[in-house]
Image (cartoon, rainbow, N blue to C red; front, side, top):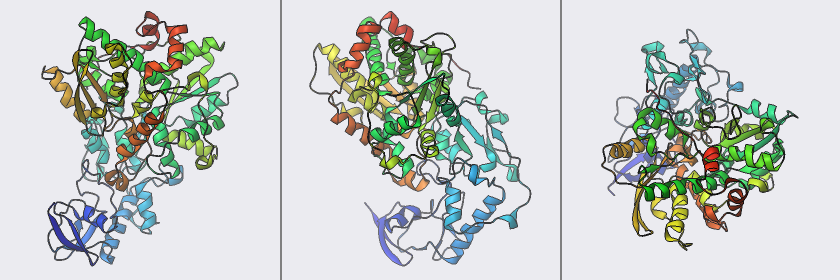
Length: 581
């Protein structure tokens, strides 16, 4: 690697030749503040928070986009730099809704943190006219409050990075604001509900639609039997909300917290993931053997499903008809579990904790509800962030809670289910079951490492049951678009494709803990979080979905067999083509 010699604050450094000043400063242990910068997503140098002095330069330069060169001398904390940054913050605050005490991002707001660090506590001397504050509450999953927007354009870049690009800057000058085309509300454009704009936003301008009060109301209703289920990825991320290291598996503490919140039962969505594999693998084998539509594409990610409905409706026949693990678990709670325990499904409230804002949209779809009309499979879907708020509202000492186990009825799962939260995990889990069925025996090898990792597109060919099975695991909708265009044109000969809406899969979902740009840009969040799930998989006694005694029991006493008529009634769904505009 070519290196150059520079000085930062008088400290000699040798750094890679293609570094920016921002990147080079990290080698010296200096974090230069930013507001608009997100590595590889939004590198536009617009907010001017990262300005530094460079010897010989006529003015301050934006460190996030300014390249280093041999002999450069940089100064990151001079009075001129400090004055410029403070002035920028004061100007931002002068048109900002400063109701920090009631903002959901208080404590994780990058604007708030920088104001504290730089001693900015008053912007009244710049107060005056403010742009019209627009608030969009049209969707089930997201709230946009432009009164808290700082026009950093991170959300715009994140949306474009997802190949959706339904938001952007509208109007000009003082009236510039972020909105949709022709000022349409979000529910009238092809937003896929992924929430990547939320986790990219540095302030409270974008938040999930909070349902904490609805959850507490259900728990406190003596007529309701409230069951909670948690997605595989939550255990690998929830700890971050309480200061624990990225990638800490907090499954036991999470269960303990949920029990103390007052839920009647605490179940694992991993049960639904194992059930999904049984149905999905069966569907795949049926398509292969009987000339069905190939490639078959997974259906676990509701953001990807909505993307397909908007942008690739001609490929909907390729999508598996299986409901997601969230919906399968909810369906079984309101049928099998309800019948076994003499419960009226109308009185059961199923709350899911998901890494994904799109799950809020999914539960409102016109799906075929398992327990009957007007009885949704899942009633309330909350994000990891909302669960952390509930825990804080109950004043639970999360870090010091004991480790507890899920309730037995839906608490047994396999390693195949645990890895659903990582990109490639669904594919690997399905292959473990499909390979055993095609080979007619239990195979010793269960690790399909070629589909692991955080790369956007991973391909592999496996020789199983006398045939070559070509698979792909895709995450992020830009990558999905690339692969699906090849499928549409007949240029891809895959048999099976896993698609996850969010880059890196559910561990990087739009409902996951907010991390600052510094962490998001220079820490491998996706890799560290996924590692926790693969570690759990490796250490579990059962690693194939079809070996789960609970799954065997469900089929033996209730569903019959995978792909049965009853299984299709309860566990499968359909999709609809949607307009883009």
